[in-house]
Image (tube, rainbow, N blue to C red):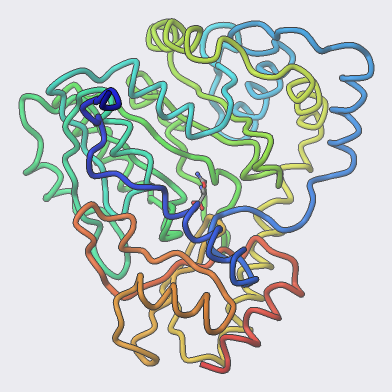
Length: 383
Ligand code: GLN
């Protein structure tokens, strides 16, 4: 009998580029600067806090929206950083990671025919998430090479079916950040056309050169129509824990939780206890911009001796580089060859465009130990 046939919901989607490049890196024993994760361990103190929670017997289901102690400490952080009062009872939900937080917001709001504006290069889960829910992605390119938003272009693409707009600051893969002017434009547009917003802020604390993180949480008008998503893994160096959260006004969060309760119900308990204790010390997040800026600066300094040309980066743990002085290959061919022949894995930025737009730019993750960055630069100098 022929195997059961299903009509694919994602006929044009393959395996994510992160999985592909990390596997290639492992196969060729390359230094892996592709998938975004640190190669150093998270804090011993944090691990002890999680361990203690486990040893004390906190091993059964957490409440569906998340542990109250964790939600309270998040509300405190939001107050301190963005001068915004968030109700931990009704406006915060703990999620298994940032990607899940985004999917759940889309699943909560988007149905067949709803248009969702996404900026390309786009983090690779957004468009499949929209498609799985029957929505229609409306792709708008960021200006090259600064990767800023052309708001006139955005206005021209809004239709009566536009339901949502997804922003991401600091931006993956480009490292660009949105400015106050961008948020004001967004606020105006969203109000005028009654749009929902997802603001993906998983690199929240990773903003450099003294710039301010323009969180949607700073803007009460915009926040009223927004889901703002965060990741603990990205900022506390434990991406494998898959822990994050979503903040939204109570009326939106009530709907979000209806979906969340049947997707995963609740998130693992000891991690939530551990993170709640860890977040009680603001220095654990206040020191992050400096910590990561030093890594970025060190990486840029090392790369000066190569023929790669850095593009401007203002946040996240990614640095884009042009390679036109080295090769005119496509970015995918180039990234594969650099992995195989020079032993450094990166991500080709065309993977973040549905039509494969290739500006001949690759993405490096610099969330790595100094020695890793040194060894990678040493290899890249040979090119
Ligand atoms: N966010 C990570 C990156 O951009 C990857 C996460 C994943 O592999 N799904 O590299």
